[in-house]
Length: 202
Image (cartoon, rainbow, N blue to C red):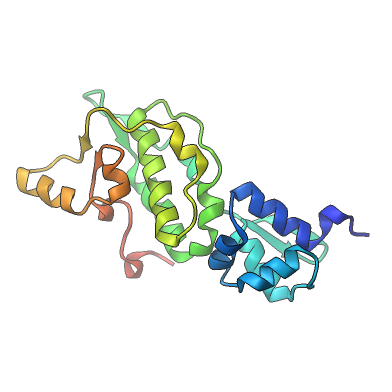
């Protein structure tokens, strides 16, 4: 027997609140009409199976007969160890892991909130903490949802960090740096993390 916590309405409300989403933001991610989600969440409508799956996927969950389960979502918070120190002692992000994370959301933008909402632990690198925050802020801004609350924990870098290169390359990189990164004192072209969709392995 289903308890009130086991109803689709409760699943949606709990998941939406956990991710800090409004009903309107969830509707945009799930590609389900806002009034439909509002009626389901308030218990005024029973969702169709395909509608419920779209909503739950956007919340980072899946549904199957008998209940719900988590889907495999690589979260930004899982990447706090994706950096090392190079031979000179400078912090070096693991660009491959960051690209793989971005690729996941290029292919499945509906899980963006589930991927960026959990708060990462401090990484031990102010550069990397700000890099993760900038990634989360850009993803939220691009898809039109609120930025995760945890990004305010990290003050921007005091000294600007930029990817190495010739003076001409550095000027070009600055011109192609997303505003969210510039605000945090990081100069790096968007293409260092985000690839064109046709280059993303399916």
